[in-house]
Image (cartoon, rainbow over all chains, first blue to last red; front, top):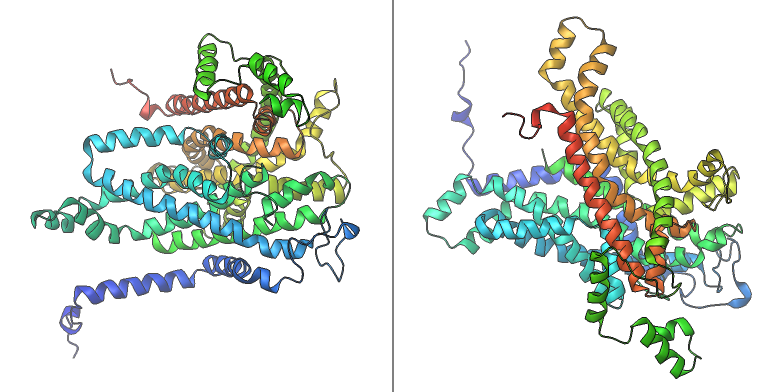
Length: 296
Length: 284
């Protein structure tokens, strides 16, 4: 004879803290099971390794010129050939990972921190602050990122720091808008109400209560923006207002050598271009994997 | 400014005289005020470097850029919609995954990187298309299209992902909708259901997205026009940056901003025209 068992009677109700930890572990498991995420992480991991140790493992110095050996096609000695001043393209591609990654990470972190703060404030406080800030956000969104960057970086001298500041500031309103949308849904929930009834101060509710609960969308937005940052910074460097020569930056290398393409000397342009392509694809695969795993 | 134009070896008096003539010895704010007061009366000023009226230079550039952007849109809109709908009809299957991941990756790659890759493949390896975008003067429409195909292709790669993603999302939503189920249950053939019920509803958001992509398109044009040496607004902007030719640069950015705002507005209007549910003020 079977007895219908009440499932609640057997499973002890886990304390909330454990429940949160289990949920988090489940999310991490979902992320790690995503093939897209893993593929992207491997590519990004490779470039992170190059950014850290590229200069150490490169066969030549990325800056050493050799006029006698300029524009040599790929060979056993120079795997990716040499550029117009005889520098080893392979070494420059490996070393080039550092600048673009440091600058794009810096810009994205800056944009995410500012954008999250603004998004929390406008989404939670609403009212006049929200109205004013949202209009400013709209104005920012009205100009294409590359054009805006071009304009500002002409006025100030382009350097790694100014590129970080410009891209970071341009991204701030875009990130703020996403965070604000997440906060709007969150502020109606009971735990926020409870905190308000406990007479907690607004900054604590925003950063102590709501922020931990919107971290997933913030993380997704961060990775998506990182992809756009690499896109924008590579383009700005290519246009001559981003990372400056003689840094072995990929965009700069493409700009320096694209005229040689017509003559058939493709290697100093194609290898750095391929490096940019793989890095942005890697970051986007990671972002896509995270989106699917965290936003369900 | 005059120092840049005349070079390092020029006589200081000549430099001073040219600075005086161009007005570039004044404070930056005064120069800007001078330019902007011209703009409101319809005068964009004169380029420091070429001494030609900026409006004349921009008109030629705009025409060229419009040709390139027009060709790119002409190619990418049908392709993107087709790709999105094809992916949505096989949601979650291999075709969907290939199209979605491929589109996403294509979108993520900057235009100038695409330019390098398509030049390598089509102009150097296959040798089927010209490397420069500027067709010889006075050539026919087909030749012009042939010359513009490679640069337009780069823009197509970058825009395809956005448009196909929107078309895919719209189609999936429409496939799930009640009216589609009703249409299937009343025995309409699948082809008719898709054409009459699914596509009509799915394409609305896509059209709005197409217009908002103008901003990205213009950003991309700058890099593309530089690498293909094509005389459009983007190249003028870059030349303005390189020679600090402020009237040219300011006017180019102003024009681009206006085009962007108008395009976004048009998208909103078009959207409300096509979708009776949000027709503004129609309730009265």
